[in-house]
Image (cartoon, rainbow, N blue to C red; front, top):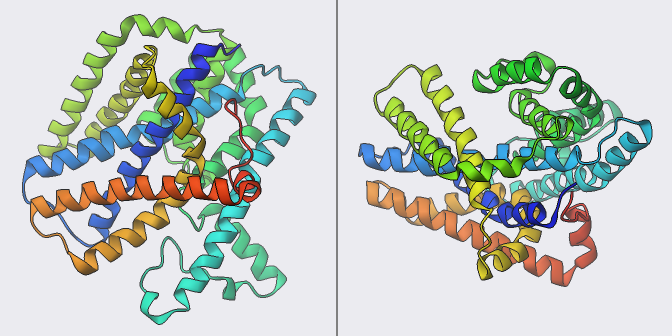
Length: 362
């Protein structure tokens, strides 16, 4: 069972993880516009915050989601149906709604000549949905390449729910061989494009680990004893990753080092959450309820903000690049949170539908 302390820790981590994911997506605006820092320190600073800190966000969320999914999992048909029906409400319906909203907004934006260059992710608009066959094809394309890019996370969570009995069976019957295989998939990014879901190498290993926690009845609180050790390992892995990138080492090497840094970073921040922090926990707990909404809207908001920012103040020097990086992160995080607060107060039913009516244990 999940006790009150575990619930508290999951709740206070959600919003900071969302902020980390925003950090992860900020460099896209620099890359797409061929903007690169001239100073190595500036480059590594961006890599550290976006790749090593921001890179923990999605796998950490997957870990939490898998942990909650396999809670009280008994592999019976009744339990499976309950899990699937619950995730239809919390994942599938929001995925469909956000996809349709993004599609409608994109069609409206692209119909205005001055905004024609502000498209994101795909070139699909509502105008292309004509005829039953084409509608089905476009719907399939949106499933594979969502109109809002980060929706792949929601899609994969639902697909992992459908596959949960197989994952649970493997975790019960062959946890060690399974963990070895999943480590290979995750660390070495084994190609899964042929399996329809190119992101499977990110989702399946983390879900398998979550299943092993419950199947093996692991006491994850024991990790709290090793916070200092885990922190040192995380720092070393992060330092090796930055060194490998700065030294132009073989890409597979710094990719594995990055995965190790992400793994130990997740463990480190999880163990750090063991210490209650009073008013900070209270604030993070309240902000936690807006995490899903912010996740859904932050990429299109960030993309639009960065394009507008560059129209008025195109960053060229390292100091301007760091200002662009910091300002767009703060504005995106703050504005999307305020939008979520306003949406919840003004249209509570619509807001609840868009976030899947989720509770703390979903």
